[in-house]
Image 1 (cartoon, rainbow, N blue to C red):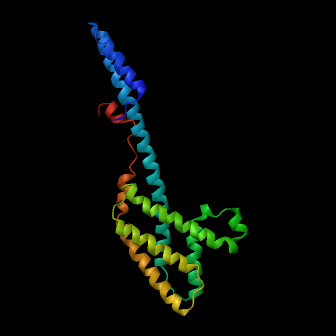
Image 2: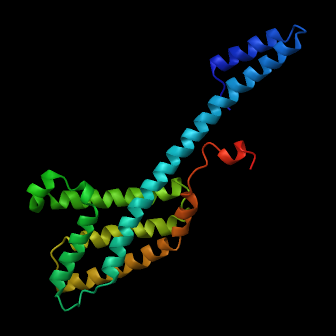
Length: 210
């Protein structure tokens, strides 16, 4: 536990006061020391707890975006009646639209030229979220996280590459690999729910003696 210079001075002053036989003074001095040490540390702990909660909530919101994308592509196939080119376009369009918060005015005005840049930015954002799940203590399985990150990047990049017949077969394979990897990640979704219970910051029930 870290003790600041101010807290140390408070302890030294208390020791000095305790040389007297004034019991009330000693008691008050002890209380002041306890307050000087533990109250700031308690506040810092609660602030860190809230900050961690916010990070987990942000990661969960990004996870839900990928979940929507996963469910969208899983509900359709390259061989739907709409035609392969249309299906691929719809998948790519859905991925970008789910990252609408990143699509600013510049993209809207020059989307044909800037699309590769924004696609890469969206992929990197998703990969950062996926890797953060370990440090946020949502999931410690590095193998699952790596497979989701790699298969997502491979599939999305393929969506925005003009395909020929051979590449369309590879795209279908990349789609299936991403679906399998993300399905494994979804098996741990309950970890989010456990971590995202509202933090009992002020412990009202304890204060009431409940």
